Image (cartoon, rainbow, N blue to C red):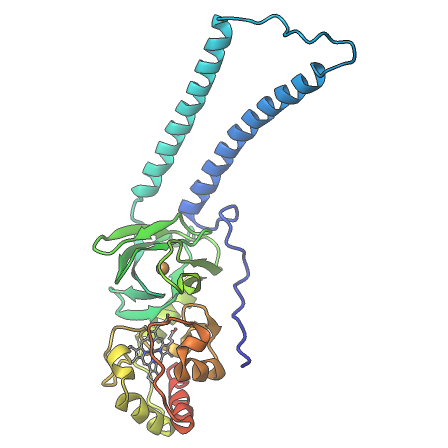
Length: 325
Ligand SMILES: [Cu+2]
């Protein structure tokens, strides 16, 4: 089968290429720690190399040990006080950064999102905007004209997952029965990738998350499009009947139809997503057909069963799914 893997996105997910406020702080702190440990490494390795060369064995050396130094107060003070000061510096700076990250001030404009980890996909809800989607988080850029922080509430429907978009914010665990919070304030529009960062079962590696940071007007248009109920396309009527007559509707929601299941991703605006199966494939009619025929072919272990549909039913169903814009 010819299923193309989705392209990952323009930027590599590196903590050294941050585009958002908490991630800037994390990069700065990492550089400080790296500078200190690099300095220690150079001193220790330098003295070691010097000693190896300077005191190496030469022909004619006698084999006795050189004179030994016992109980030098100066040396003992040096190797106690200097490391102690280094630890104090690391402790104080880290504490300062942690407080700054954990207690963000709300900007005048904020976006609230709830992200729910599921084996092996992310549900994304905007409670104030009435939007439900999956695996692709959309947030507005924050600029001087309109500073906007996005606050993210993290919950789990099953096991422990972890939410990590390295360029936007630090890693936050997603724990059943406990609500965690994180936030982002991206400064540069673009698409940033991350993935579940806590082993959560067989398809953990295919639990990707992409975040699109939009200029404000583009974000508002995205919101309006997601809020709309999908328009009914008369030609896809047969496909819709297949959809509502088999078990799809007990696991999936399509607003404006009898489908109101919540076990799987909301499909109301399925075609607005670039990927399916939490990044396992690009969202095209071919991959959709392959997925609905048997999700395990693309994502072994996926929590959606193969429905044993006929080729004709599959065609009709996919024709319907592709109208969910
Ligand atoms: Cu996970």
